[in-house]
Image (cartoon, rainbow, N blue to C red; front, side, top):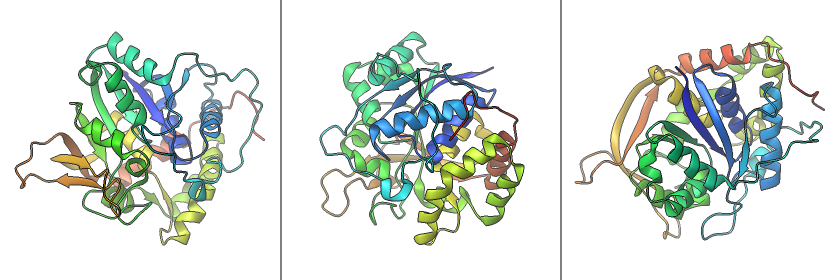
Length: 319
């Protein structure tokens, strides 16, 4: 039985891989892609989503909705120094690739209300759209089955500052609001989970490249710029927190260990903006999220490798 879901994304590098999972895994019933300001320029992110739909052979099949173009209260912060354009310079003919007229926040509210308790959301960018949807519809959090969030670090280091992971740093007010809204939340943190179990090193990347399928070539291309950056900061491989988030929703058997936490996000600290305070149950705080602590790293790689090995022809040629 397929699982109805929406992917809320700031499409660049691993967001593209996460979209491939939503588009190609037979367990996924991807109802929409909603765009949020994050990694790269907003219009660039939209083009990257259409490029990924094309790579999956599903161009024109899944609606793309434009969500919030900036954080709730702050100027947008870019990660273009990490991702470049987010797709390694990949291009195609975008004729007819138009997003839906309905705003992304309205789409989230509508889709959740149409199937209360059935729709899951994979949020792999800043949480601006999700927070805005809770403001628009007080029933939104209750209508969503589960909210899988890629964000924060579990008492570990950040990736944009010493304290903060990028998604929470870009819109900390949104993240704070989401964790207070009453969702059933599962958190996939940057540190330690991504850094220990969702990095594909040289041998893994060579194995994917050797597949030489259109999907494997797409993967290698879109991850190239980020790989260069990761190596410059001491990570010998590509990082895959977003695709891990999508995979864990669809394949919970990949979870080895998780625990209930109380998660809150710092908004006022001069040095700690976006810091995720994850309390593990000894501070008298009620849990508001499940935090994934360990996954089957080999199983995740095997899953993604098998997905990329599929023979899928793009709808339009890439340039």
